[in-house]
Length: 236
Image (cartoon, rainbow, N blue to C red; front, side, top):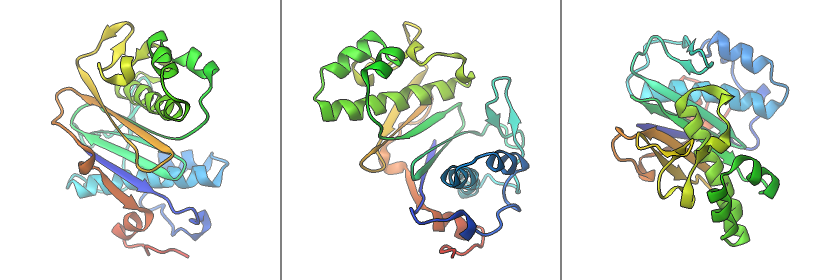
């Protein structure tokens, strides 16, 4: 298991970036072109750049651009790299990548307001009881942390949005492991971390993965990723 977390500088502008088309897949170029927000397009560009960086760092990358296949649930995979599984997530100023030899899911979220209406809709009675027992500041943080756990679990399953988030539960804040549709799931375990105040992230991995800790996460800046491919680390 390898995790890479990239932080985008707040002053990075799309028009200041070099021409990335020689690196990015046609799928990514098409997808990014449909996004209306500049920040959304930056996160999309750097998601695939981070994937390339991760594959290269692990000695896996053969050539660029990448070729993607898609499962029946639209989850992307790399047909040229059998046995390599990946997942991407981005929010706010961050892009995160998980690489594994097993199915994996990762989610990162920027802190947003906790509301009882959302909790009642997407969280189990046990989760809501747990949240209501916490002080307000801690409750807001745990609300997002649980959300990332649910999303990463859903992404690891790879079955798309057809599974309601309320089918996935983490009693006692996840200390007892995941519960899927009322039954404990011993085949998967979760790891959570916070890259900085206001952000929460979670990785859902196979129980067969080697033990993992936050010290193994590689934190990167946008310039490091650009420099890897011969571009200026300080585009202007």
